[in-house]
Image (cartoon, rainbow, N blue to C red; front, side, top):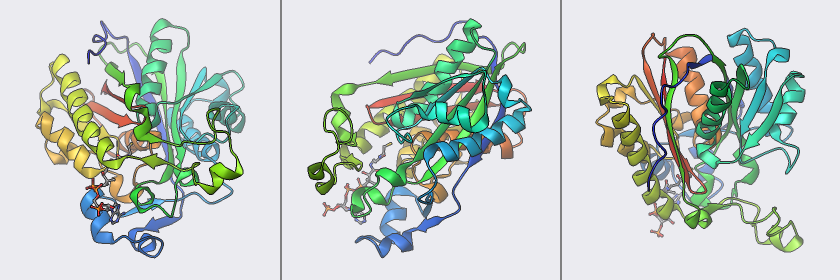
Length: 336
Ligand code: COA
């Protein structure tokens, strides 16, 4: 597939604040051994996951997003009323409508912003950052609050061992701003999708095709259904290709990438992408072992963790890569 061309003379759109929230409750592999026929060894060996966080019944996706957003705004020293735009990437919105981004707007009292959601599954946070870049680069807005938030436990079937070991809950947020520092910030992105295999990863019921009914509930069709092996094969190819392509077209060698911040679906998929680039493991940011796959929140929390805890230096390169349902995939390059 062809990718869209590289950004020409990108304007400086920079991350000026970051925050994340993870629920306190931990669901371990040992807990899952008591729920389905699985084992800690199998889960660790096949996925790299040891535990994941689970939000309690009263906490929704927007509640987690609000907590992450408040931290990002505080870090950016930006008042909520000065936020211009809010984008929330999620596949687990609080409701079909209104958007989760509007609920976040209410929660943080960002009364001067406009807000909308993006649905690109696990690639959603990269799609949201790229979308925000275009609004900021055009001058339509001066700043943007970008969130990846998921309560995947709400759509996970804890009777299905093929999927229930994989997913967790959480939220990450960053504040983007157009600055005057030429050569810094978002430098390039690649967004791709292929709807032909949309059925590989889906929640079949609850939308307009199959509204909720006693039958759909009885058949457990409101949970994630996944053709794991197909997704795995696709993911390895897509992640390798987008990672290598964005590095090459920006003339970056593996050793020039400070942090690879990949979607955390499976450690084997992450390692395959890094290997294709020739990147040393010490430059990969992993959080899969402690949080599992949080869909759009995986890269959002990952970026926030790197920004907050890794003592970044001017000129460091951060490379985000992800794939997800749709199928969607993509990458985004930031120069600190
Ligand atoms: N515990 C123990 N055994 C399990 C299991 C579990 N939790 N889940 C599946 N198995 C079994 C399968 O039933 C299968 O048994 P069989 O050979 O008797 O049919 C066996 O383990 C191997 O299954 P397979 O699908 O080949 O395993 P795998 O090595 O491909 O790993 C996944 C399974 C799901 C971890 C892997 O395919 C994957 O990561 N896929 C991508 C998923 C993904 O990224 N989803 C989100 C996209 S954003």
